[in-house]
Length: 222
Length: 191
Image (cartoon, rainbow over all chains, first blue to last red; front, top):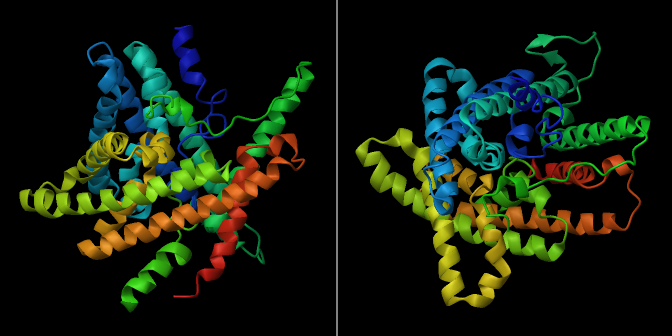
């Protein structure tokens, strides 16, 4: 039980994607112009990630090591097709808002990264916990980033005006440059607080996590 | 002729695939530490994007649409791209070893590069004809390459500067990308 909780909770803070586990940046930047879009994207990722982790974990002993990446891609792609159809049926406005980033969930490194690094080595229950935790962490981050950009860029949060009269929205924040800069500064703040914590414990400061293609494993670690 | 010229300018500068459309950010941040590496990655992306767009266009036109299998687009495209990358890798290894040496290590990374699949999907959503799709793919690939090489140049210079510890590596790379994106914003009103 404690193991299950450990795998679930690590996605919420210790390995929080995309801040601690710098993976899958495209949707992070692209769909976070508003909190609602960030949340919707996060939900789609939770669905795909949890189920793909479960399926990968179930077939982990059957598939030969050489073709495992291809199998992971097929599993992820089938789930993404399911998400697309579900969103077209029940959340069409959101589907249109997210545009090509819904089909692009299939090439999000987080899905393949977790399949390769975790689900292919662990039993189904742990894999589900890992997928749910990582997915929820991802959703939290995206909603937070989206909320920040929506407040600064439009003066709204989830579509409701939250700022005082006379507030001049920074249109820069809602556009592409704002996405890059906000994510960069948030990452830096995260590193800063990590080092502050380490200092209090008397440990030497460390550099922040680098953008880590390695844990994705699609390239076979090259 | 003029149409294609405008398409090139628009895809490279105005709607730059990384800086304005947020596609292909993982390799953009991940492989922009050295200019030579950035050039290799950029070249590989141009090459694969053009081939992938042409093949996915044909698959959509002659396989998926006639059979009414449009909803399998995502699955079909990623399979085409993944097998294409494998194929290109084997072909280059056998036939053009020098090119394989410079591009080889980047090819596997391209399967999960959302720029490649993104370009193919944009062409489908905008319903471009085949030739225009290929031109768009080439232009977008070149736009990616330019952005990547410029960012690599900036980050090479940052290596020898004293950046605050918390900003080192990815954060400062992202802020620099933001500033580049702001610079590219100036092209917005052009076309």
